Image (cartoon, rainbow, N blue to C red):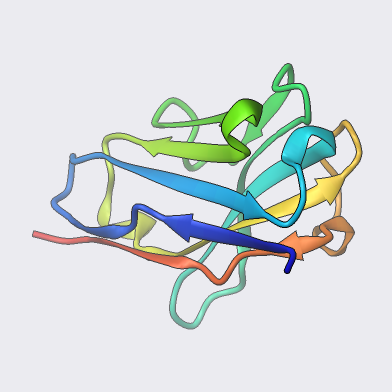
Length: 124
């Protein structure tokens, strides 16, 4: 079964950190760009970050630049999102997605596989 599974979410105080993981099973991530998205209650799903298949290219939403870092370990078939200096407005369900090809896709519908999401809550 081809799937992505996110983990690492939870409750954290403002200013804290979390590291999310996105593990693939049933296929290798080597040829896939990986994106992280989030969706807060009542809001549209938004792109957070993306990393190319080689890891050589990354991009970030303005709202997370300087605080979040995307990475990948193809040997472990896993991608990560390190989130530092978390703010209450970062509260959302976080999803990872995989898009076949070397570069990060421009459109959300160009992603081939999606995980089920992991909840991140930033609150004191």
